[in-house]
Image 1 (cartoon, rainbow, N blue to C red):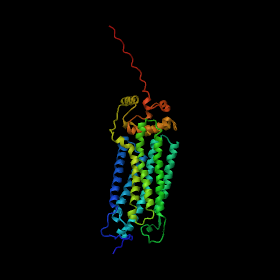
Image 2 (cartoon, rainbow, N blue to C red):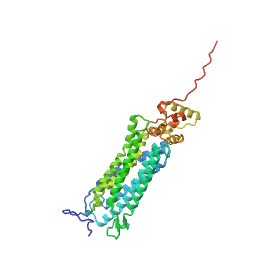
Image 3 (tube, rainbow, N blue to C red):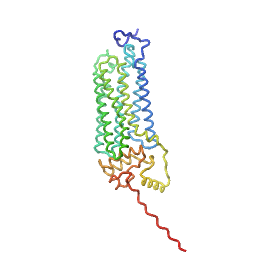
Image 4 (cartoon, helix red, strand yellow):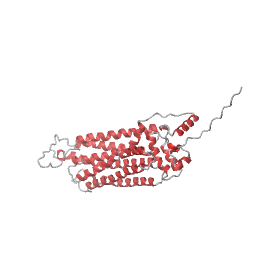
Length: 385
């Protein structure tokens, strides 16, 4: 006869044959929601990058990898439902409880890797948008954050892998060996992640306030990155739940909120990476190419004079490179590069690399630039009788 994995509290009768669902429904519904929304947004982001912008960068590969890790993380959560995830330990057999504990450690390992990749994707995207050239103060700041985040989460990863020596002791406590305090590890990890999320949220907001755009545009761009507040909320709630469940033994039931907030943190990070591309998706148009060189020059001159051009002709990378080629560090033109990038995604305003070099160095806004001078046509000769 199978015995319950944990002794029940006073007055509670274990039910191994037909146990209550507990928090299983919450795990199922929440996991589906946290999988569907990032999947849709990552698909839209990839479509815009690959088919409209036709620019597939390192950050795009990192974003796809983060989404794959999110899928693995949620899939492991689904797999634990049959082993008692969401149910009380006294309603589970020892075999199911042991299997759940083993997969739970696998989830923690995947979570750390997914968080590392997701935060790297966010920081790389901030670098692409707000850093028009390398080796500026912003560039060093973001590179330093990527390096520190990688070091910290790599250490965290090894602690998760070797939380018990031997590893079998993780799911079989009777095995001889020793373990570190997993509750302390949960709390420390959640606290550091919350601090990182707040910093990642504050950086783009502070840089957006310095952009050379009107207040309405600043508010619109800020709202996009303010969605990072959901990642901060997820980190904060994970910290709260980790503290509440620090000494819990009924882990199959008590750790469900910790797991769901951890998944929400990764999903929120992916959403932040994808939202800047959503406006462009809903204004998509097939690329138009011209084989006649004179026609192409004429179109460029017209868009130069009007201050606008079709989005499919825009190239945010060449914009940033042209700003870097002029050797501008923290100048007005350099700060405006980020505004141009967001204008491309949203309004289709022509980038400043389409300006003359003198205008770019002066930092003349697009709306104030002058059209290229055109010589007046020669007067027609008068006809005399």
